[in-house]
Structures are given as structure tokens and as C-alpha cells.
Length: 152
Ligand SMILES: [Fe+2]
Ligand SMILES: [Fe+2]
Image (tube, rainbow, N blue to C red; front, side):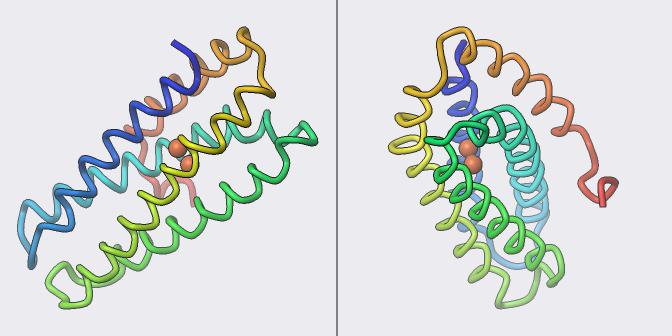
């Protein structure tokens, strides 16, 4: 497996959860469970992707711009997640923020898969693509189980 295949697996999970999440309403078990799943998935993916995809790319001149752009979007998603964590599930504004987060995530995934991955494909060699996939997956699995708040 190469790094792009590994990243796409989580992207597909994110798309699936996002679609279900924006169909929930009110303070329900379903909304709580999906939000928890979404938060964990986004968090584990972003930590592992930052460390084992973007940071190595950032060390190259041609990778600098895409890396800055992507990290800024990760930060934007993090802030929307934070907002959703702070308001009640029953709040009428919850869904509007969830939709904004979902749109931001979908846009980000599109850009990664259709632009950044192509550019990164030219920067990394085959060996790096495989090594990064292994490191990314180990990190991703580790953070999928971790509590986000324990890091702050
Ligand atoms: Fe990604
Ligand atoms: Fe990303």
C-alpha cells in the first residue's frame, strides 16, 4: 500500500460519516455517536497526515505551498469541531455548523485527492510512498484510540 491509498481509506470514512451526520436532528444517540466517530476520525487522520505526509513534503521547495494550504485547512476544521463540541446537541445552530464542517471537509478531501496527491506523487519516490504509508497507518491507529483532550 502506498501513502495515497492509505490516506484515501480515511477520506472515504470521513465522507460516509459526514453524510450521515448532517441528516441527524436534535440531541439523539445517533447524532452523539456519529459526531464522536467523526471527531475521532478527523483527528487521527489529521495528526498522522500532518506528520507522515505533509511534514516530509514541507521539506521540499515544491511541496511548501501545498503543505501550508493544507495545514491551514486542517486548522479551520479543528476550529469548527471545537465549536460543535462547545454547543449543545439540541441547539438549533448545531446543524448549521455541522454542515459547514462537512462542506469544509469535503472540499479539503477533493483538493487533496485531485491536486495535492498529484503534486506529491512527483515529489516522493516509490520507496518513500510505501514507508510513509506504514508510518502514517501506525500513527493513525494510535490516535484513533487516543483522547484528543489529553494532548492539550
Ligand atoms: Fe487527508
Ligand atoms: Fe488533510
